[in-house]
Length: 571
Image 1 (spheres, rainbow, N blue to C red):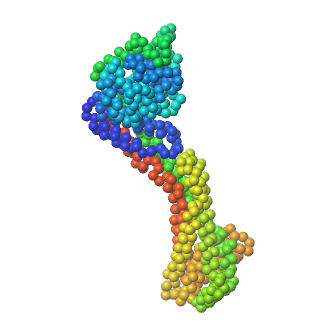
Image 2 (cartoon, helix red, strand yellow):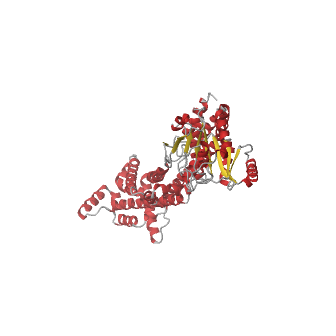
Image 3 (cartoon, rainbow, N blue to C red):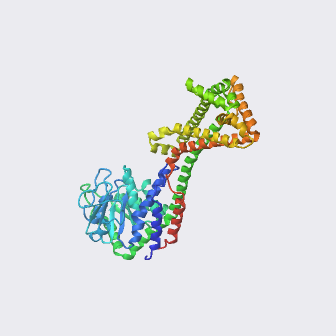
């Protein structure tokens, strides 16, 4: 059994890929997925890696079973000392006790096996979460007994620890009673031992003399039907003991003690036990790891769905903004009133006649304290676009949160994010208003630059100069919102006149094709800037997902590692 360096390296690689939090969200049966991950990590850390690193180390036999089966009493009776504390209160075994021959104590007091459990030595009971180490001269060298918590304990941590300890064992000594041998919980563990080819012996305790034959026969039948034929079976009779702390008479446990002594004394027998359990554990990785990799893929798919839902919500927000540009809603209310001022006071026509008109308006504004109508129209348009951005962003945030709440993974993520964060996600961020304002002002500057650039052509320079860049820029901004959907009554004629007049004036200066190009460029630039604002809003959702869960290649690495273990797993 030498030359296992390649296998050890493959197991270490597998363990490395199990390190991250592979299942952070409630996707699928996440409780089962997390349990499977925990069990794989535990068996690698507690058994496979240390056993391969020290193949000739002493055997570890874990004594496990149901509540009240008499595990602690059995261990005390086998070693001839009161090293564990039986009792009537449940759970009795709060901290597991490992009993070894003094010659083997150094191996077990080190953290070579069960490295996650702090060691406690000396008298007294260990604290929960620790591993108490005791020594007994009567226990043969080369073999240790570990009194595990109940597999059906009322304390969840005890049940999980019992499963962990059984997975770390070279040999299971499974203890049951004549009254409880058919319970389902023990048989689920026994079937696990069968599936993983774990070395196993069953000890049937508290058997009344008149029930010995039928109970033994029925238990043998159950072992056979569950694929465990040939499992060593020891029967301990029901005996009256003077107290709960009393040990069984030596003759009652002699068959078990003799079997264990022979096992520990024979190096070949010990090696056979190790080979069987180790090979079974390695073979089980061939199905357990790929199954875990499949669940990792599901976790990644679920996280990707959360991201896609948030993206879709903001795509819908962008569609809402597009609709707001087309439906004419921006050309009503304040914008419409300022347009009437702009046209009705003659500002537009005067600015089209000469630059002197523009100068006169500025001088008038200084004395009256009232901005020129052109500036008011531009400000009203800016405010209207900002309001449209805000409404679309609010709708996107609300849709994203509602969609996440409809998904178990989304609810889980929001709950873990806390009320403060998740409560704010349902509406636009406080930073939206200044970002939207900056984006609209930058767009207006871009539109003016478009007008300057187009007006620089020699054929249009004179006409454009006589109109003024600001006036033409306003006309182009209005031309971006060319539809009148959503406006009713008299407003249709007024708003329609707005777009028709602005369109005709622009065409007279730049030509039909140029106006279409200018309008399209202006519209796309505005959409691009709004999309950037929405992307920052969406990032509030993406930031909760970024770095969450396994990396893209984790499942592939797990499958490769499992394959490498199988290729190098022959012992």
